[in-house]
Image (cartoon, rainbow, N blue to C red):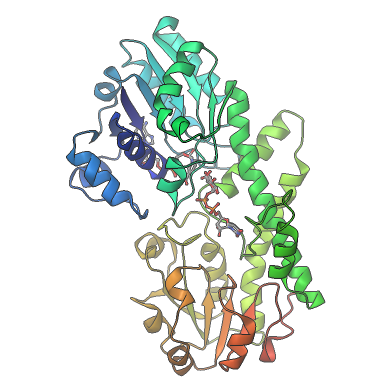
Length: 448
Ligand code: NAD
Ligand code: UGA
């Protein structure tokens, strides 16, 4: 079985490498020639743990190739996966499906024998049918089937998520298409992964509904965290007490400075737009989007309040810039909202991130980028922890204290324990838990 994957980004590259690991011949295509050149040299353009080894071994055994020529890759393929971006469309919040439709046009021009064309990109319900319409306009219908196969991997654990998913969702409406998809996912079927066959629109909607539901859990616990601060309750215990109820579950109840990343923000927004268009409003998801945007803005005010009400002339060390650990992805990261507010309020920001610095530099003008945590802390007034990278969980606290002008830590990921930090002599502020020292009553006005 031969596969072509169009788009060699986080999803295309991981899916392509994993399918080659399953034993298929895979060609990953990208229109970004520089990216393909790097991949051909054995360089991985993104930070994703384990991806370098997987790409290296499958390139070496000849099952994984890279190119820029869609036609050449599609001609010999049994299945073609579209894994291009679907960012928020400027102006109206809908998903921009122009890259998907452009890829479909190119694929249509190259199909010579029966091919299954699979939308793996996250696309609004109805998009795979638009892909089918493009193919129908150019080809005899016996030459293709269109399938929707949304991807549920997370950045940072993408390979594990792809190789051992909770489920595989396949929107396929002919037996021929279902049979090709069954063959492609046979290795997962053998380990008893649930495989759900649906229509095209149902598969497309499952993806948006799943992302929006997870985002809802996060927005919910974030508002509960705010309430905990008012009530002197502990959000982590509340989350644990809720999550032990099997109907709720413990995952995705970790409070944060707001969810970010290339998917939750854009997918929640896109789903609300589809719902509006269909005159079936999703008021809960509307509220999640608003709540999360507000939270990111409020976080900057929290930092300012924790610094005594003003950061003018202060230097703030920031650890973590990416939207989550184990990725270099900066898309919709909370740091992009919080840092400019601190700078505009007169602070100097010194930042360090283990993998995201190259991506962050062009996005965060005026920030001083440092080569490690302790360099960022040198001469800073306070420390703000923005992303929970493992290396920030084990800082040398004595050294941290000696480097800071004021022993103040604002931990927006709750990676330390308040008692331990108070014992170590820090003024410690975290989310939804009791704070210590003068930070005990950090309040942000309701208006922000
Ligand atoms: P990305 O921006 O990392 O990669 C997309 C790639 O497609 C880019 O390299 C771009 O150059 C290439 N491309 C665009 N048009 C092309 C064309 N016509 N021909 C060849 N290459 C083309 O995007 P991503 O993060 O991998 O996301 C891809 C899709 O998967 C999106 O719809 C996203 O919502 C969805 N998704 C992403 C994740 C994730 O963790 N990033 C997880 C699940 C689903
Ligand atoms: C998310 C989903 O988890 C994947 O299933 C999905 O495939 C993907 O979006 C997508 O469609 O692209 P990802 O964005 O990589 O994956 O990362 P998550 O681990 O879900 O985190 C997203 C954001 O939520 C991060 O900013 C993270 O810090 C935040 N988060 C997550 C919380 O604030 N609290 C939590 O408990 C969990």
